[in-house]
Length: 223
Length: 284
Image (cartoon, rainbow over all chains, first blue to last red; front, side):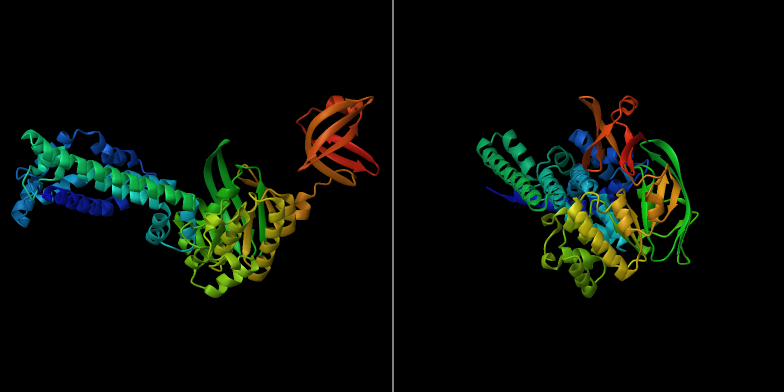
């Protein structure tokens, strides 16, 4: 039995969490600080992947990344990168799919910070960037951990979008969830059982550790 | 000298109002800002700090902080700000809270010594009492050696013993650093002890400006002493009437005539005074 699909799932989730953290951090900070009228529109857009059926999201991404769209054509012709049915395409699709799971906890974390604490840092002469990294982020560790871990776990758990954008190429796009689907399809129930049990166990342990960490933080710092 | 001439549209709990202030404050002065809640005191501090915008002009020692639409950001204004709810950096120890503002270990140690916090400088804010937190906050505000120290009801959340202790520390610090200080306060005894000048705000305007003695001591008639309080109850005891009045934290009983008893209503703010040996009680 091969564990390649699991390794691929975790590789995909790690890339996605890392990239999304870099994208979502400024976005969440902006959303938490702005009074702009555009805020609800941006919030609604970032929340879309929660409510959209994965097939809809998958269809649009597939269409956008394919050779038929300007984006896909540009990547393939100029950079020589094929985006659909490739690992790169999967990472891009996952970033869209998991965006709200990174943005929302971070935004909530920023919004629950004591506003005066940030202002005290500005008055101390510190820039917004210094304040973000030395005051804001260290005082919202639970939100930070929640955002990263939930994004990771959510990416490991995705199925519909991955299947549509990536297909099922072993070692390239065949992640654990897709592998299980195929096992059921060919009625290899014992393999499906083993894979599913592993997924269940890992997911539970990940969530459990998030909750334990957050409970400890709130006990220690009264957050 | 701080010159200040500002206006700002405010939307408070009492509907829209116009904050319009024009005054100047001498260097080294200790100014108390007093007035009802919602009168614009905190907003004035926040405008001075650059945390809120306003129209008009602010200049400090010939340096322009605000001029029509050009506003110096809080980072570049030389101020210290003490928030009502401390606003300490929870991820840093007391010492780190101070050193974050300026890497001046000598000054930090000195401030912590004055405020008797030196022993606990390695502790985190969550392990401190309210009074200790506020002292850290005051020390932190002084770390930049600011031109102006702004205090937003810094002692209102503390019990009276702690308040008096911190008032003394504030006085010590003010004497040593000579920082121009503006403090929002509701407590007349605090204002009397600390401030050299009081500005009373009402509805966004300055309605009184002067020395604490002149502004706070309300003299009327020839009373020997006078207190203001809330009339809680009038009870009939045999043939006389006794009024129970709350003055500050204290309850007092006074004998009132039947005429006074019928004219006064419970819940009213009353003035209790005595002329020679005859206490009188009148509706304010």
